[in-house]
Length: 404
Ligand code: ADP
Image 1 (cartoon, rainbow, N blue to C red):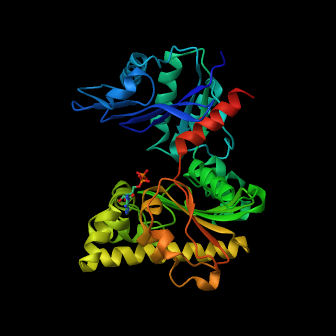
Image 2 (tube, rainbow, N blue to C red):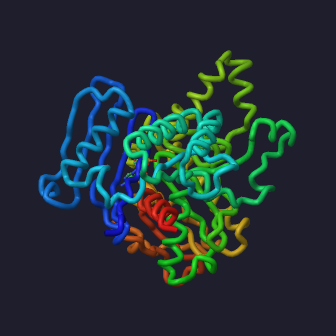
Image 3 (cartoon, rainbow, N blue to C red):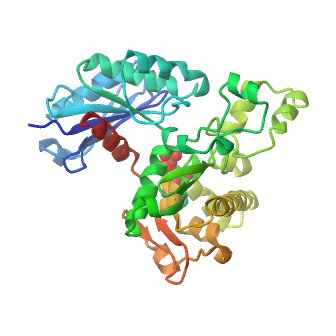
């Protein structure tokens, strides 16, 4: 029997999301989530999608789960109850989502002690994310020391950005000393969506230029030239670029000096303001796009402003990336907002006929879990809606690496 299963782990600071996939047919065997790790009210939601357990649907267990080690043990027990345990000989590898790979990691990487030390060394670049990723890896290695563990980095797909794109125009020695450059994030999603878009157009990835708009709670755009990322909107951290649920995206860096000097705010307070209390939330008090749209519809002025600001930024990036790519074959929308909101797609592309962009309004209004084209027949540039699947992409990259 060939081991063809991959367990994908996405460890956050207080949560672990997981999926068990069978790469023989890319099917999902089980999915789940541990939330509020370290609190009294932790919760494990496990859903077997195959075998005898599947008929029972989701199983929810509530009660304290002290740390990531306990969380993974609990996940392991749930999987084992469905005959899908970590000790199964059919498990080929564990694929870990790792947020920051710095300049060091540009490809999925088999984890050993040295690699783990390097990921740990990158914590200053991603203090909110990499520590949890490291813990997830440590715990999974303890549970199955013999099993290949692979790190798949959110930054990797963007490592092909040319130097003049990745560099900030600041003193080069200072930038080098502190590893300051644009890294980009959501790379696994951008890679998956760019490839799926080429497939949708019936073309080879090398022959297609795509602008990918990943619009979730976090949001980023990328310009992908023949399958290679040449520009993306997030930078040193996920703060740069589009207006997001709670992040400001682009702003004059002098805003930070002003808040410190005139507002007397500490660096941590400004960090929290820009990452957690800005974007849609800062502009109108809601970060859920559905709520913003509902309020805007009712005529709420601040929700309308937030929506207009969100759309304006999106248009600027579509225009900029059209210029960067020269020829654009497709614009692809993905993630929670991009996949589900026909209104956001319509607003973002309104008035862009000169760039070759026009929607088929009827096709755009259809909701579907399938990748699809929603552009007008006459439009020069295709518009695609492509549900992203980061777990499948992580599993595919992991499996490809361990099976050589
Ligand atoms: P995350 O970045 O947390 O992975 P998601 O990709 O799940 O985010 O996207 C979350 C966002 O998607 C939320 O802001 C939510 O409001 C938005 N969203 C989900 N469904 C819709 C919809 N039908 N219309 C507009 N926005 C939606």
